[in-house]
Image (cartoon, rainbow, N blue to C red; front, side):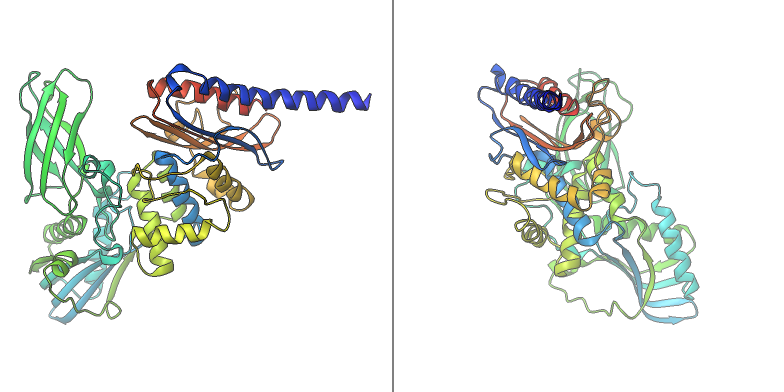
Length: 479
């Protein structure tokens, strides 16, 4: 009788594995995937065995699933309780409550100042800074405000990002100073379809903006416009269409100069709250690019330090909301702490050195931390290797950063009402003709699985591709 029980168990196990492979093969055999590049792997982490797959060693551009590398690396090397900071300094002499010198803001890569994703208004931060200045006996400034975001350098954007990306909100690059998610909001008015739109204002106000508007009203239901412009340039071009007859329609773009935006906002706050400022607003980038040597002693006069959010909070939003800026910041923060050089290049070097001894690194190419670059290449097998490594160590924290199918983040609409609802924890990736998912599934048996699915160059809609992907997830969850 025992022999039959074991045979029956093995039969059921083989059948469930076959269902996963069948769902994979059904995707591969679709006519609209005939010219597609596909890499898929499913690994039983509990039993440490790969149970299904297709081209699992084929490296492909995976879009935003690259964020798994950035978040896993930063959690592993910096720890979940690490807090990026922004510091306020003063330099000079205080006479009769007047500072004769400088007020200086130095950024260490905190992406949360003024962020729409956190419940901490920028005015609250400025209020604590102003209070700290007054406690130091300073009520007015005879001198300049200097904002320094040089800790991450001034490359502007990672290699591999295109002209079509960098002016839009998702193309905001990493910087030592971040504010408002490095986002510039444009407000347009539209009338009848085919007529030119009118730019009403920007938030924050950017008085230096040189804006070329080619956006027209159209019979569209959503934002179909694009902003073009290089980092640190106030020249912006806008094309495309917006819904007709809108009194005010918001379009999100990238902020040209976060240092300037934060400095100007703080300067206005001081003036509005009875703190006189008699001087100029300076940024470290402008000083350096104009060949002026900046000399100050950062250690002498720390006034206040703001570090409101943990790395785990930032990593969770990175993966749940797929925020490119946050992913790039995490990569650069890791480099800043370990190599004292917060650049994308240094971050990628640390990332590679950390993982190449832990997973199969052959063929991997990463040129950014967010997946926006199409020159990234990773295989499904390598994502499963990373997921397996995190499963053995920092599993609970890492898994907590991932959206849950049918419940949260970018997976909230996925697998609802199926066996996979609430059982899939994964990061999604989407670009034009790229769709990917990588993460964990807890099967009905209690076993944990790692899976990765990367699809490139298919001839159907994303929604249609996701239909087949959901069937694979359901098959895994039924195990």
